Length: 429
Image (cartoon, rainbow, N blue to C red):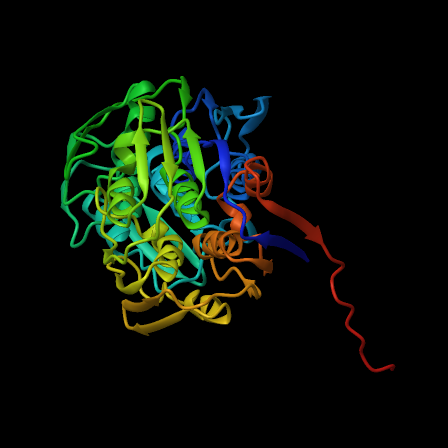
C-alpha cells in the first residue's frame, strides 16, 4: 500500500517537462493492431495505462521492443484477434479501442468490457451505433463485447447523438479499411482524435477533417508501418499550470502545444493568474489573490472535464462563491468529500458544485477517488500548509509520469512511501 506524503505551503518554482499524452498514446497503441507491420512510437508516457496497453498487445501475439526511455517498436504482424486477456482489459477504459481495431483488421472482435476510473455510467451505445452502421453485428453478454462483420465492413454516414471521444476514435479505427468513404458527423474534436488520425495517415490511411465535427475516412486495403511521436499531454500540462497558481509559484512548463491549452489559460487569467505563452512552453505565475470564477466543462475546445477536479481546488482557494458545472460525466464530484476533509465548503447538486472559496483549509489524510481527482488531492496538498497523506495513488500513476519526482524538482516537499499491506487474521480451524 503506497501513499504520497506532502508537506505543503511552498511555492513551486522552476521548469517541468510534459510527457506524451495518455489519451493519444492509448488510441495509437491500439491502432497499431491495424497496421500488420512494425511501428516505432516515440514520446510514449511511462505510465501504468501505457504499460498495460502494451501488455495487452503482447498477450495477443504482438512483439514489443523498448528502443529508448519513451520509444517502443510495436510489431503486430502475427497478432491474433479475440485473445486479449479479460483481467487486463477490464482495468482501463482505453481497452475499448480494441473493438474497433479488431473489427477493422479481422472483421470480428471479442473483447472484455472495459474498465477505468469509476465516475459514472459510461455507456458504449454510440460505439455500437457506429459499428452497426458499418455492417457489424454487436452483442454484449457475460462481460464481453462480440462484434462480427461476416461480409466485411462497408462505409456509412454516421451521426453521433452526442459528442463522444471514445466512439469517434473507435469508429475511425473500424472504418480505416472499410469499403468506401465513411463520414462521421458530430465527431469529437479533441487533440487525441487528431493525433490518432495523423498516426493512421502516416501509415497510409486516408482521413480528413480530424479536429472538426465532420471526419471523412476513405477506406484503404492495407496500412504500413511508420515512426510517429505522440503529442504532449494537455491534461498533465494543465495540472501543473493549476499547481503553480495554487501554490503562488512560477513554473515554466515545457513541451506543450499552447493552442491545446487556450481554455485553461483563459480561465487562469480570469482568476488573476499570469500566463505567458511561447511556441513550446508556458510560464504560469501568481502573486496576488485568486479571483472567483464560474467554470463549465465542455467538449474540446471548451474547458476539459479531465481538469475539473484540479480547478475545483483553485476555486476553493479563491475569495468568493464559484460555480463549477460538469456537462460531460455523471458523478464526477465524488472527490469533493475529500476536499471537505480539508475544510473546503462545497455543495453538490447533480452536475453542479457551489464552492464557497476562501474558507480556511488544513492538511488531512485523503484518497484519490479517480485519476484526475487524485491529481487534485496532490494540488491541494501542495497549496495547504501541513502534512497531507494521499492513498489509492495507483490511480494517479495511471496518468502521470513520475509526478512525485517532477514536483520535487520544482521545490515541493513530496515523497512516495510504501507501507506493508495490512495483515488479516482469521479464526483458527
